[in-house]
Amino acid sequence: MTRILHVVTNVAHFDDPSDTTGLWLSELTHAWEVFAERGFEQTIVSPAGGYVPLDKRSLTFPAKEKTASDWLTDPSKMALLGTTTAAAEVDAADFDAIWFAGGHGAMYDFPDNEDLQRLTREIVEAGGVVAAVCHGYCGLLNTRLSDGSLLIDTRPLTGFSWVEEKLALVDKLVPYNVEEVAKQRGADYRKATLPFASYTVTDGTLITGQNPASAKATAELVADALA
Image (cartoon, rainbow, N blue to C red):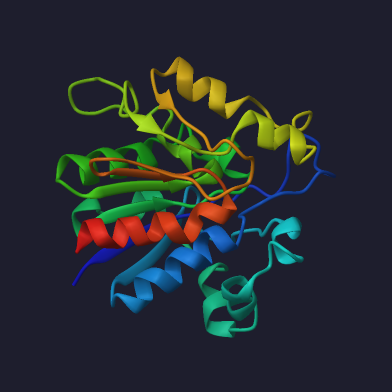
Protein backbone atom coordinates (compact mmCIF):
# COMPACT_ATOMS: atom_id res chain seq x y z
CA MET A 1 0.00 0.00 0.00
CA THR A 2 1.35 3.41 -1.02
CA ARG A 3 0.98 5.96 1.80
CA ILE A 4 0.74 9.74 1.44
CA LEU A 5 1.24 12.29 4.21
CA HIS A 6 -0.60 15.56 3.56
CA VAL A 7 0.61 18.65 5.45
CA VAL A 8 -1.77 21.58 6.02
CA THR A 9 -1.55 24.82 7.99
CA ASN A 10 -3.04 25.74 11.37
CA VAL A 11 -2.72 29.51 10.81
CA ALA A 12 -5.94 31.44 10.23
CA HIS A 13 -4.77 34.99 9.59
CA PHE A 14 -1.97 37.26 8.43
CA ASP A 15 -0.12 39.49 10.91
CA ASP A 16 -3.32 41.54 11.25
CA PRO A 17 -5.96 39.15 12.69
CA SER A 18 -8.63 40.87 10.61
CA ASP A 19 -6.93 39.65 7.43
CA THR A 20 -7.90 35.99 7.37
CA THR A 21 -6.25 33.14 5.52
CA GLY A 22 -5.72 29.39 6.04
CA LEU A 23 -5.54 26.29 3.85
CA TRP A 24 -6.34 26.75 0.17
CA LEU A 25 -8.76 23.87 0.06
CA SER A 26 -8.42 22.71 -3.56
CA GLU A 27 -4.68 22.20 -3.08
CA LEU A 28 -5.59 19.39 -0.70
CA THR A 29 -8.73 18.10 -2.42
CA HIS A 30 -7.30 17.79 -5.94
CA ALA A 31 -4.42 15.73 -4.60
CA TRP A 32 -6.70 13.68 -2.35
CA GLU A 33 -8.88 12.74 -5.31
CA VAL A 34 -5.92 11.81 -7.53
CA PHE A 35 -4.38 9.65 -4.82
CA ALA A 36 -7.71 8.06 -3.86
CA GLU A 37 -8.21 6.99 -7.48
CA ARG A 38 -4.85 5.21 -7.29
CA GLY A 39 -5.85 3.45 -4.07
CA PHE A 40 -3.26 5.22 -1.93
CA GLU A 41 -3.66 5.44 1.83
CA GLN A 42 -3.81 9.09 2.96
CA THR A 43 -3.23 10.91 6.25
CA ILE A 44 -3.49 14.62 7.08
CA VAL A 45 -1.18 16.31 9.59
CA SER A 46 -0.55 19.90 10.62
CA PRO A 47 2.27 21.58 12.53
CA ALA A 48 0.32 21.91 15.76
CA GLY A 49 -2.39 19.32 15.22
CA GLY A 50 -6.10 19.92 15.65
CA TYR A 51 -8.22 22.37 13.68
CA VAL A 52 -7.33 23.51 10.15
CA PRO A 53 -8.77 26.89 9.04
CA LEU A 54 -9.85 27.33 5.42
CA ASP A 55 -9.02 30.42 3.39
CA LYS A 56 -12.39 31.99 2.58
CA ARG A 57 -11.22 32.96 -0.88
CA SER A 58 -10.73 29.29 -1.69
CA LEU A 59 -14.39 28.64 -0.93
CA THR A 60 -15.85 30.88 -3.64
CA PHE A 61 -15.95 30.68 -7.44
CA PRO A 62 -13.69 30.08 -9.33
CA ALA A 63 -11.42 28.63 -6.61
CA LYS A 64 -14.21 26.44 -5.27
CA GLU A 65 -14.24 23.84 -8.00
CA LYS A 66 -15.75 20.34 -7.89
CA THR A 67 -13.26 18.59 -5.61
CA ALA A 68 -13.46 21.40 -3.05
CA SER A 69 -17.25 21.51 -3.27
CA ASP A 70 -17.50 17.77 -2.79
CA TRP A 71 -15.22 17.96 0.26
CA LEU A 72 -17.24 20.78 1.84
CA THR A 73 -20.46 18.77 1.61
CA ASP A 74 -18.93 15.55 3.00
CA PRO A 75 -19.06 15.58 6.83
CA SER A 76 -16.53 12.75 7.11
CA LYS A 77 -14.03 14.66 5.00
CA MET A 78 -14.58 17.93 6.85
CA ALA A 79 -14.04 16.07 10.13
CA LEU A 80 -10.52 15.24 8.96
CA LEU A 81 -9.72 18.96 9.07
CA GLY A 82 -11.09 19.35 12.58
CA THR A 83 -8.84 16.81 14.26
CA THR A 84 -5.53 16.60 12.44
CA THR A 85 -2.56 14.82 13.98
CA ALA A 86 0.41 16.95 15.01
CA ALA A 87 3.55 16.48 12.92
CA ALA A 88 5.51 15.60 16.06
CA GLU A 89 3.42 12.45 16.47
CA VAL A 90 4.15 11.05 13.01
CA ASP A 91 6.75 8.47 12.00
CA ALA A 92 8.22 9.18 8.57
CA ALA A 93 8.81 5.46 8.03
CA ASP A 94 5.06 5.03 7.68
CA PHE A 95 4.90 7.10 4.47
CA ASP A 96 6.12 6.99 0.90
CA ALA A 97 5.51 10.65 0.07
CA ILE A 98 4.85 13.98 1.76
CA TRP A 99 2.57 16.57 0.14
CA PHE A 100 2.63 20.19 1.31
CA ALA A 101 -0.62 21.99 0.49
CA GLY A 102 -0.60 25.77 0.43
CA GLY A 103 -2.63 28.75 1.46
CA HIS A 104 -0.94 31.79 2.97
CA GLY A 105 -1.14 30.32 6.46
CA ALA A 106 1.67 27.98 5.42
CA MET A 107 4.02 30.97 5.24
CA TYR A 108 3.86 31.19 9.03
CA ASP A 109 3.89 27.69 10.49
CA PHE A 110 5.67 25.61 7.83
CA PRO A 111 9.21 27.01 7.45
CA ASP A 112 10.60 26.60 10.97
CA ASN A 113 8.70 23.54 12.16
CA GLU A 114 11.38 21.00 13.08
CA ASP A 115 9.00 18.07 12.90
CA LEU A 116 8.02 18.88 9.33
CA GLN A 117 11.70 19.20 8.50
CA ARG A 118 12.39 15.82 10.12
CA LEU A 119 9.58 14.13 8.22
CA THR A 120 10.69 15.64 4.91
CA ARG A 121 14.34 14.73 5.43
CA GLU A 122 13.60 11.15 6.45
CA ILE A 123 11.13 10.56 3.62
CA VAL A 124 13.40 11.93 0.91
CA GLU A 125 16.46 10.12 2.27
CA ALA A 126 14.50 6.87 2.25
CA GLY A 127 13.77 7.37 -1.43
CA GLY A 128 10.30 8.81 -1.03
CA VAL A 129 8.70 11.71 -2.86
CA VAL A 130 8.58 15.27 -1.52
CA ALA A 131 5.93 17.45 -3.16
CA ALA A 132 4.55 20.93 -2.65
CA VAL A 133 1.99 23.09 -4.39
CA CYS A 134 1.69 26.88 -4.25
CA HIS A 135 2.70 28.17 -0.77
CA GLY A 136 3.36 24.59 0.28
CA TYR A 137 6.98 25.16 -0.72
CA CYS A 138 7.34 27.34 2.38
CA GLY A 139 7.70 23.97 4.12
CA LEU A 140 10.86 23.22 2.13
CA LEU A 141 12.74 26.48 2.68
CA ASN A 142 14.72 25.52 5.78
CA THR A 143 14.84 21.73 5.56
CA ARG A 144 18.35 20.33 5.76
CA LEU A 145 19.47 16.84 4.82
CA SER A 146 21.58 14.67 7.11
CA ASP A 147 24.77 16.06 5.57
CA GLY A 148 23.73 19.58 6.57
CA SER A 149 22.89 20.79 3.07
CA LEU A 150 19.62 22.53 2.32
CA LEU A 151 17.13 20.28 0.53
CA ILE A 152 16.34 22.89 -2.12
CA ASP A 153 19.89 24.16 -2.73
CA THR A 154 20.55 24.02 -6.52
CA ARG A 155 17.25 22.15 -7.04
CA PRO A 156 14.75 23.23 -9.71
CA LEU A 157 11.37 24.00 -8.16
CA THR A 158 8.34 26.25 -8.38
CA GLY A 159 5.73 27.75 -6.08
CA PHE A 160 3.55 30.84 -5.81
CA SER A 161 5.38 33.73 -7.43
CA TRP A 162 5.80 37.32 -6.29
CA VAL A 163 3.93 38.49 -9.39
CA GLU A 164 1.00 36.33 -8.36
CA GLU A 165 1.11 37.75 -4.80
CA LYS A 166 0.83 41.24 -6.28
CA LEU A 167 -1.94 40.30 -8.68
CA ALA A 168 -3.82 38.64 -5.80
CA LEU A 169 -3.46 41.93 -3.87
CA VAL A 170 -1.79 40.31 -0.89
CA ASP A 171 1.79 41.49 -1.42
CA LYS A 172 1.31 44.02 1.40
CA LEU A 173 -0.04 41.32 3.75
CA VAL A 174 2.45 38.47 3.34
CA PRO A 175 5.29 38.23 5.89
CA TYR A 176 8.00 37.74 3.23
CA ASN A 177 8.59 37.16 -0.47
CA VAL A 178 8.78 33.36 -0.60
CA GLU A 179 10.02 33.30 -4.19
CA GLU A 180 12.97 35.46 -3.16
CA VAL A 181 13.66 33.41 -0.03
CA ALA A 182 13.71 30.20 -2.07
CA LYS A 183 16.29 31.77 -4.37
CA GLN A 184 18.33 32.86 -1.35
CA ARG A 185 18.35 29.22 -0.23
CA GLY A 186 19.95 28.33 -3.56
CA ALA A 187 16.86 27.00 -5.33
CA ASP A 188 16.63 27.16 -9.11
CA TYR A 189 13.22 28.83 -8.95
CA ARG A 190 11.08 28.59 -12.08
CA LYS A 191 7.62 29.88 -13.00
CA ALA A 192 5.14 29.88 -15.85
CA THR A 193 5.16 32.70 -18.39
CA LEU A 194 1.53 33.48 -17.52
CA PRO A 195 0.59 34.03 -13.85
CA PHE A 196 -1.96 31.59 -12.41
CA ALA A 197 -1.42 29.08 -15.25
CA SER A 198 -0.79 25.46 -14.34
CA TYR A 199 2.94 24.83 -14.08
CA THR A 200 4.96 22.02 -12.52
CA VAL A 201 8.63 21.23 -12.00
CA THR A 202 10.05 17.76 -11.39
CA ASP A 203 13.58 17.14 -10.15
CA GLY A 204 13.92 13.47 -9.27
CA THR A 205 11.78 12.88 -6.19
CA LEU A 206 11.15 16.61 -5.64
CA ILE A 207 7.92 17.61 -7.39
CA THR A 208 6.39 21.09 -7.14
CA GLY A 209 3.46 23.04 -8.56
CA GLN A 210 3.25 26.82 -8.85
CA ASN A 211 -0.30 27.68 -7.82
CA PRO A 212 -3.79 26.27 -7.14
CA ALA A 213 -4.30 25.57 -10.85
CA SER A 214 -1.27 23.27 -10.69
CA ALA A 215 -2.50 21.03 -7.88
CA LYS A 216 -4.02 18.24 -9.96
CA ALA A 217 -1.12 18.05 -12.42
CA THR A 218 1.38 18.02 -9.56
CA ALA A 219 -0.50 15.23 -7.79
CA GLU A 220 -0.61 13.17 -10.97
CA LEU A 221 3.16 13.51 -11.30
CA VAL A 222 3.55 12.36 -7.70
CA ALA A 223 1.26 9.39 -8.28
CA ASP A 224 3.18 8.39 -11.40
CA ALA A 225 6.50 8.66 -9.54
CA LEU A 226 5.19 6.40 -6.78
CA ALA A 227 3.84 3.87 -9.28
